Image 1 (cartoon, rainbow, N blue to C red):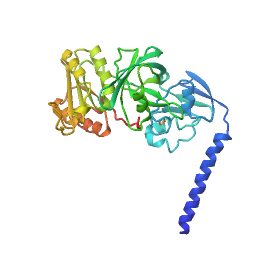
Image 2: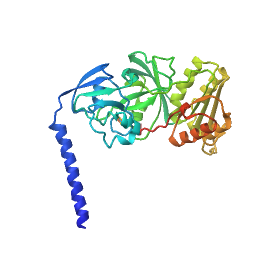
Image 3: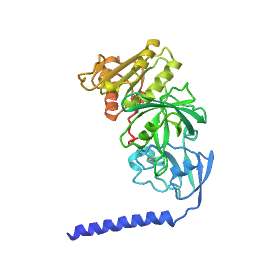
Image 4: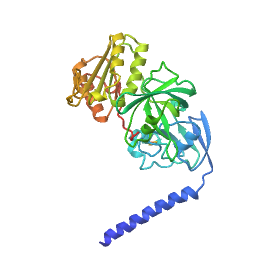
Length: 368
Ligand code: FES
């Protein structure tokens, strides 16, 4: 019993000390102005010390990806800290590989600016912009998914690659929070950003986006994302997804056929029931113009008494297995829940598609 009390008291003292240190740092310690050197003199910032590195960079309009609003739970906000970052924190390690730890990669939302720093940030992120936009249309494509189109006001155009995303700034009582959404409009519509948004119960950003009406204004940063289409015309493209995993695939497919009308492409889309089907008519119309475009939708749930469906059934990886011939040169883009991604990856490996040719987005982000 004495031992248990000892542990309780000891833990209490440690927690008390941690709280006291946090309060002291917040209200008593001032770090003054700190200098941040980015990419060996490419950008030099002077920022107020004491804030997180993410806030400091955002205040200078350097928009590092952040899907969790700086809570340290998405692992998106990685930058390389070459000097001045202090020791790595336990909150960061779950999101960093050993190689990243060795090379100084840190989570910008966890690192505090306490002294002058030197950073390395990919050039592409330094070009991310803040956009002001106006809603031009909203459309329910299923019972819980809306397609929302924005006209860009300032700046009036976005230059992005198929498969990239923006971070919408959603209002909250604590100030704007950012959440990632793939751009579903093709790259040949540079004045438009279209999103496909599922309403997540309790999801701050999805509730906000579903509430938007034509004429409302919104802000987002972007573009972000590393996917790059293989430009070799002999490489077949395979897109596999479910739910709002449709958004980046729609962008990729329409952009792809605009550039390479003759190239071969497969779209596999998994739905639970007929209520979850959307864009099928649009894709069938696209396929009627591009004979090398193959569209396969599959339903995973049993058909209800009122449902009619003569397409594929079962989980979508079964359709991928059924239709794709082995040993064809391919690039694959997968977007959906982790179990779907894992199952499809296995099938693609069996078909001879190498890991470097499979790109995926497994919705590994918190409720949106
Ligand atoms: S913003 Fe840093 S982990 Fe999410």
